[in-house]
Image (cartoon, rainbow, N blue to C red; front, side):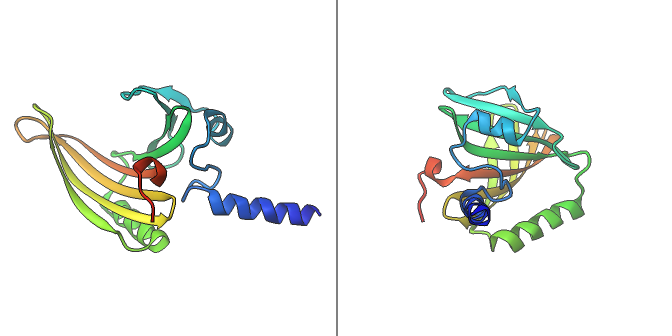
Length: 168
């Protein structure tokens, strides 16, 4: 009986978990995040009805994980890499790992956003690893009004397709 229960729980976990975050599922609540990632703290949020919880330095070369909850339910995860320790070969390895585990990208889009005195410039590569999740790898450089780079970020985003209004 214990083996049967374990088998059911294993199948449930792997069937409904978020790619690369097996302890989480879309629409988990804040309590679930605290159980999976002890030491997370509330971060600044810029959207109404959205709470952001952050886990700083969860592993090597990662600055933080950011968990976005809308109306109390998980809908987005950001992995923000440490720009001081991630090198060109690391970026290639991250991309190769994504391609190996999630398949070929479904789109590659440039990022060009003018925000007055600053411009965001880079690329976004999107993967659809399963019916429930969209994953984007984004390299974004921040340029000032003199076109001088002031910041560079590598971000891996996981989105709940329900929240994006996407179904496959």
